[in-house]
Image (cartoon, rainbow, N blue to C red; front, side, top):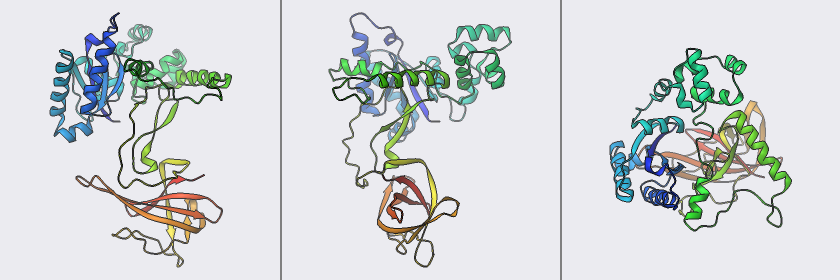
Length: 359
């Protein structure tokens, strides 16, 4: 789970009638985006950003902390409470307490929080009667016993207490992103597909209601939607985000040198599948140091030993990234099988992987 830097600015949590709170929040976000383009507004007064990238760029965590404090001071004239932990739930708690949780110690930090930190008054009251005073005490309960005694909402909180879910239900203000765009004067465009005349059908309403019910039962990460962002290859461009979470409206205008040309696969595998490429002598096809194939591929060996003939291929296209640190070397190859299926393969770490399937 990624370490997040959370910024808690108390005066921005209470919305003022003149609308200045939203404008101040927008000014702060714009200034923070210059520091890190992945700043995410969670609620008024609370923002998070991934720590690893800015830390490497600015030369350490302390430099990032100082830069963030300076931005808040310069833009708003306020002091903030800053915290670092893994996952949104623990990151917000750390920010409220002004604690930087060392890497690998988030579980211990989460377990020692009072049970009231889960935000459920009835659970906290019942927990005291049962001798449960901390999040760790609640997490140690067997899931079956929790299901017998408590509601579905508390069962979700039990998964948060155990670290299975990274955030609380309702921890994000799902309307904030649209409000910020409106305050900036931008058109608010939803991510949904509308009908021929722009209307929403009854099926759309039913799908929304069903997604709400599933998310209520399974928690914030129970319903995921795919979103595209910048990247060089299809498997790097698609991410899954919790349904209803604010999307980052960042235009992908970067050139991305070495980007794999379209069309993109209709299916991009989140977990690549190991495969083998063979030549006409049934020898493994390998990538050379200069990005060339050892022989022309004639067959593809899939999972469980299934072999398919390769009738056409294109590539490979070598790609070397992060040359300034531990470089990642890959090469992509498109193949067409005898049954008409088209697939995208990737050579990395001495093996071939299936990463995409074309329509």
